[in-house]
Image 1 (cartoon, rainbow, N blue to C red):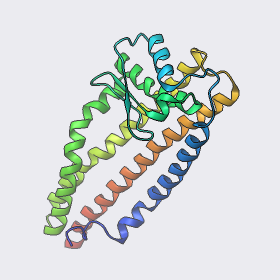
Image 2: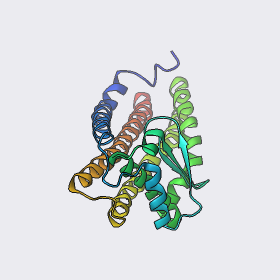
Image 3: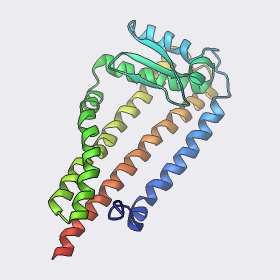
Length: 235
């Protein structure tokens, strides 16, 4: 009963485009990764070896490599200068391993250069963690207690998550752009087939963030409609 004022048929109608987009993107990601994780790259280098070669080229001598569990859990931690690679990426010499490793090194390069959009996104993290949690609470309490100002406060707090998704997109697109440039300049892309594979894997990864933006924005618009509806009902 506590969640009924927030989650109803209208919520599903609002979120349907984002859900469909997320499903299509997930299918594309799985298809691209499944295909190119089975095709060996021409250099015969695993993700770990690609990371060592490219990090040396970039002068990242303090970068630490770490094996992490999971599938497609690869990431770069700017706080500790750690590049985390999942087992399949780290240990297999595939086109997908090469592309994903280069993408994460693109983030490391952003960190090394003090890339402004990345710094802005990192600065937003504390506000997002607090805002999304408090936003849910304020919105639900505002709707249940019919306190419009409290609901709008929740919408404002929850908007931090949508802004974070929007801020993340250019950071990820730039990391993929850097990845392509790194692989080309280092000679790791040897054939047109490899170029096609790298592009498909990186494009699939970028689309996941497009879907995340759509989900966050549509969810925020739904909450705006709920808070706005309270005022209309009173009149």
